[in-house]
Image (cartoon, rainbow, N blue to C red; front, side, top):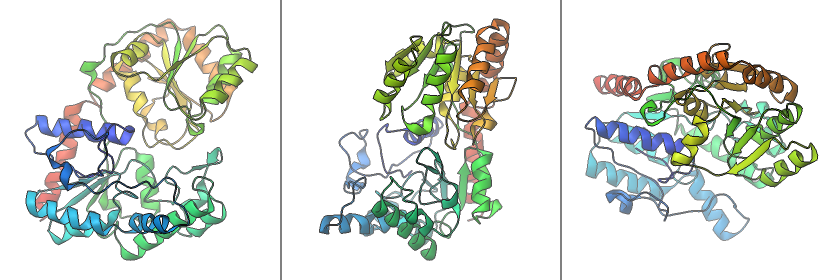
Length: 403
């Protein structure tokens, strides 16, 4: 199982570790391949990992050129991965996020060894140089075309000409070499939205399988009432927290808890202060039981993203806690939140619409309870670990039967 990071960095890594543990519980042996990092989880296989590299600030220098070359095609990763395959002889190679730090140079090695490759898509890397499809506070649609250099002109990656040029060159090279398309047997899309975008990009429909993420609801204790509205996530522009802050200022009778940290932290505090939104509490970063406590005592959860969320893991956490969700009508969120059943969908970047739906739930305890119960039921059934395991094994077994 390959992923560039082997520590809990974000949603992709959380899913990676939860899937790993799920497979191990069912008796499978899971061997990781990642980049060396002092924050990594301990594993016997760490000596086989690739050397560390910083890819977030590539400069026009000799070291910068070496880093750029490795991002485009890592010979070290290919060599080490080939050695690992020789040593382990796995039945399946399951790829997650490998671009930049590892690169898709490893994929032909799996094919050379006759091993089927499965990729779980956690973002839009197969679609555009800007893998979040978000730039300058808005959806970055035009980068989805095969004219990758339009992303350079618009500086769609980190607002940088150099970063955008490198990302465009990376996609152009990988496409011409067929590194992704020719060496992946199945792509798992967590949402139908992402599956559709992949098809529009020219990936064969027969290669794409829609499998939603999962959550172990037994670790969460539902409570069908609460004292505040809750947001959990990174405080960054694409998460739409400013929309929530402005909505909260319109409904000051509703307490709002914001859990998370990020680059927008100071600015969001300032906006809340300017608007006199004293009903907002910024709780900082929480995890474990402290986070579950926040969910349990919320009345409902708000997910006001302004980007195309691939899935929305915070929605599953809300469901497991028995909470309705008010979310943006955008991307994968539109599939996970069932309008009028487990929550409401609202217009993107519209504080008035968001405030109106929040007020409806706040003043409707019976609706909160019924929606919360339906949400919990979904967490226990459609999004249960055993259901996910069967879906994953169906993909694995189908590929093994075709060998």
